Length: 168
Length: 103
Image 1: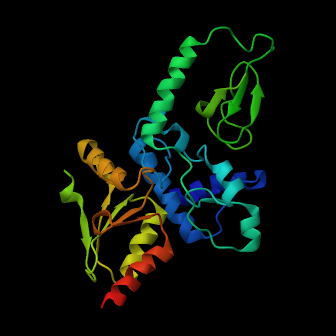
Image 2 (image 1 turned 180 degrees about the vertical axis):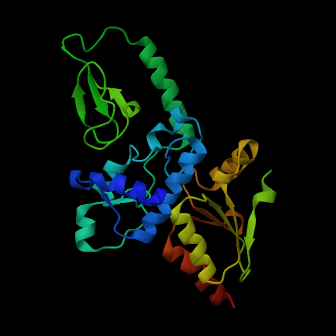
Image 3 (image 1 turned 135 degrees about the horizontal axis):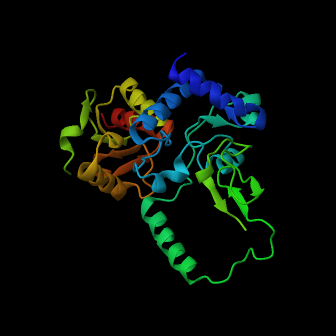
């Protein structure tokens, strides 16, 4: 089996959980090839339709499935690339169109990151003091896990552990 | 500039100067290139993901001048007198129509 078909089968496992690949195979073939090229190039499957830096911390939000997929599916019935589409779009047989970029430009992201750092340095006191466990949130799908550590792989969407953020 | 040697040219009708900033892996960029070719328009393009270091930074900065959201593809017509963001079929077709009307 080709790498592309292996990747397709792996992603199709999430179909029953509400994450549907675009039924246009020619279209998704091109995107799956792009993901495999980026995996070889950067060491992870960065979005084929966005410019990755090659620094994983900077690209974390655009490793497929990206942080923007679910909001884009909700609002536009497709993700930014068109790899994933909503069930409604499949049912209607509609054609997918390009959608606006939800990710903020690099300069704005860097500015926000710098501000967040300053704020977190200022912050004192642990807000989770009353909880028996810390709560981890999957940045891809929003799944919450109240346990000592985030799961190895998100049981809902398959995102890796490093996509979880401390929620509470 | 600084990445001139990486700019590829595709022949066709040269009534307009069309420059694309693209990614080699992006499906919408591929569709845009194919459509311009089908329309018979000459264009130049640079695949920004295939550049590295200072060359990529230079291309990114040039693209930023025309499109601050820095999304791909960015289509710069006649040195920025018109900028088309993304695979916008209507706008791309319009490039041909205007050429014909001017004749």
